[in-house]
Image: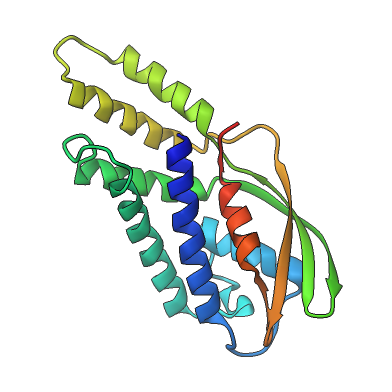
Length: 208
């Protein structure tokens, strides 16, 4: 699970940073730092495009972000070192789809902000995926579904299937984590800096 967390975080951070830099400089500013943080999370996690213009994104930017994210998830699974006989294309695509569904169930709340010239600080409370609980539930379900005719390959595939279900069902930690996010004013937009983008992505996958 810890390896999955590292892969997951690296994928999301890379994609987010690339797309944030690509989006700068479009149109007039329309959002406060608090609103910008919320619109960013709404876009990335909920797939909510209703306010993307207020954080410097266009429809084509969002489409590219979504495509890159899904492609990167697949690449991340492939780099996990699991045999392709177990982690088949079907299993990888199912995991990807389950994660995308699960993103929409992540809970977050954006609090007050403070501004110092071109840097804003925003407090965000977020509940990410509880990886221990997901892993434990997947193990229990896999063992409950075990039968003597199953091969080792089928056993591990069942486990991955149930891990994916944990994401899709939104198995989250009980207590939110409070983050301090920094946003830089780039031209007319409040943009999360690279370290804050990484912090947000890391908070999505919790391994105590």
